[in-house]
Picture 1 (cartoon, protein in one colour):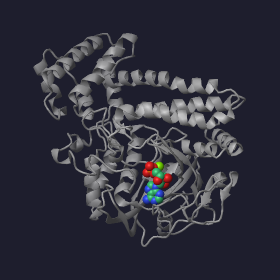
Picture 2 (cartoon, protein in one colour; picture 1 turned 30 degrees about the vertical axis):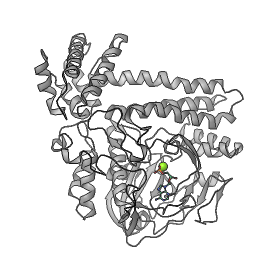
Picture 3 (cartoon, rainbow, N blue to C red; picture 1 turned 90 degrees about the vertical axis):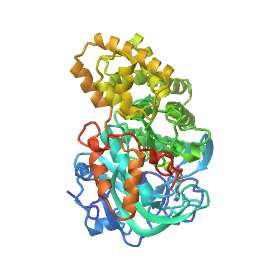
Length: 517
Ligand code: AMP
Ligand code: MG
């Protein structure tokens, strides 16, 4: 076990690539470099609010002492750390946004762990960097709690994600206009320490391509492959790498679909090159099943980042990445083909996951209609997605519509109309017919369904309540949620197994959120 403050960090990224070493924090364009040195700005009084024991244990990090808490607050940088903000660009809401960069994230270094893995440690909300533009480089308690809990929740759900090691309150106030409507107010500041093998995004590659810094683009690509895709080598390694990024991105989106997660800001600067869920902002789980749902008020009315569009956007974002790396190819046919393969890869994964969710032994060609009809039934009735699938696991033989409506009633936010109920009835009849041919036992099917359908999800209204309590200094609900999210497939936290209450329907912060805070 090492302490954060005594550990010898690696700095492979900064020592490999060109950077701006001046430490100047003035907002500016930084052509020619992949990062800029950015020392965290000290805070008034860092106070530890949460610590992820499981992650710390995996990494071999000791419980934080006062010095470590100073690191978490940005008040201490040890001699082997090299704090920097990465320079990246991106497409935001479909438009080229040029240079963005880590405006409020500062990486401290790479932690080589005894398990052989290396973890990049990053503070989010530790003060301005050259990429802060008009922002203050800070994060509020509200958004930091959301990032901390949700990245850990996604991990326990089995979905590729960046992690969160610690959360500190800064003791400083931060001014925020939560809904960009002129009603700015002070909120408590906080910092999350995030962890990932790397926080590189599609946008890091787009930046170099846009600046036509092709030698650096090639170097970054080679470094990314050598370090994070070490099984790839030989003359086809770049195309094989892109294929794997496509595959990993599809896997991530399917994970989101399986549990009903909406990211909310799938800009290309928020797309991890490792296929991890990254940059938790105005995300939400679905309560009522609605493919058109976007939790992000900035995403209205277009709903570009709505639940049901996430795979389309992933493909669009991958096409930006393909364009960025195109200069590394003499002939881009293979690149175009690899990009187009996303659609088939995603479709195959989609049907496979639907089969798992409804407990089929395998998905045969003729089952595709059943999977689609099941999804269509949910779109029509808009039941609570999580509760619906839980009820499906123990579904008894349904003989008529009344029985059907009664069985699924606990998942309904409103009574289904006649046609929708009819559609569900026909679908469930087909499903029960199909289950008779299942080549696995009923118990095995249930086990499969339990493993693929979470029973506990970190609903926005629960987070909202936990945040309101935490803002008053009470951590009771926060701690309960922190426990519940560790066992999302079990029933041990059934106190949270309930519909979203009416009061939360249109409550700011509990159903909808704004982009960055
Ligand atoms: P996001 O969509 O939240 O991932 O952020 C988009 C861009 O805005 C990134 O370059 C962020 O670093 C930057 N940004 C967001 N919030 C702030 C802030 N409070 N201060 C400085 N930069 C910020
Ligand atoms: Mg971002």
